[in-house]
Image 1 (cartoon, rainbow, N blue to C red):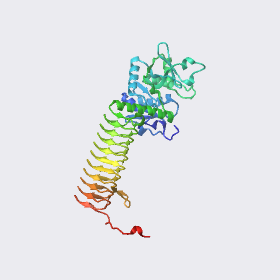
Image 2 (image 1 turned 180 degrees about the horizontal axis):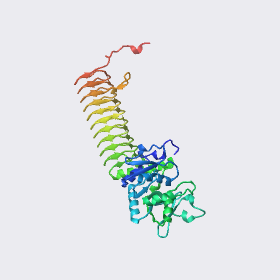
Image 3 (image 1 turned 45 degrees about the horizontal axis):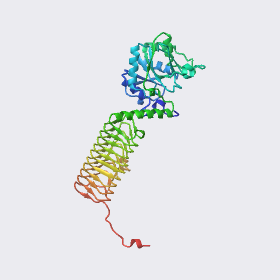
Image 4 (image 1 turned 60 degrees about the horizontal axis):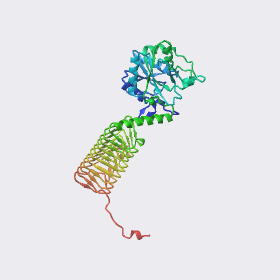
Length: 440
């Protein structure tokens, strides 16, 4: 990956790479999930709840990795092994694998896939009865063994083992291979040599073999995962204007009849309500957008948008912003840590930070809350009551409170509280100097 970040911690659609197979295993009903990793890899925060880690002290191959996990799987009867860098493994496939394994009474069952171009993958070699004899890696093909190279059934790296059979076979693995490592597929050779049944379950979706070894493959896997995420949302009643130009994380929820416009990214824990319109060209991270809200050409992060509210175009809503029902944050408006009351409007060219605005208020263009006290290095709060109307170019120097139905005159710098129903005029009286333009 040429990265300071361990491979399995690179993200795919909002989740670390390693979290994808873990979540699939849990969804398939796994009682325990153990993730094997090298010493010093900070996996704890990346693992979904319920998964545990096991350290592989020596980099001695996939066989050594499974051996490192066995102490954490004491008492298990059936063990499924998945590669941590193959994120497109569906839970349904794992359930099918375990069912097929138990039905056949096999000691081991490998998931295989049939590929039009199997180059680079280990081939599944079967006997005349269809039982798996061995897995031959491409590097192990000797001479002109075209029969093996012609096989289109490949190993996906997903296995199901009888726990007792696996425990007995692992100590018998050898390092007699090009890499000098303990290869897990050799377990199948050992079990077959013992006369045990080794079966294969063919996956209907060949994408399960898509792993990640560099950033090119990471992009390929991300594109396939994104395609599946969007297709699921669309089948559940969400309209996506152009799936080729929309990004939606796996952790996002979208209700039916929502419309996601072109150029839009929905990231993190974002929730979009029924019938909401998001886009075109929006980035929304860790935000809640209620039913019927409309967001256009805007950036939202950690914001909460109420039913029927509208945002944009070209608005920037920062963490802690709450727009109540039918409220508006208009063109070139920035908000931060502010609660905008029901039906209130901030139409354009304003900064509202650390403020509470009551219902039914209307803030004129270029209304600014001067919230930062540079001497004390604190943010002060501005409070506006219900039905407040500020004139254009009003600066509210916090801490300050405007009562219900208060007004401010255009161009005012308000530094004192304004009573209910009062008009605050805080500007110098105009004077005109005649003949000024003619002076030299």
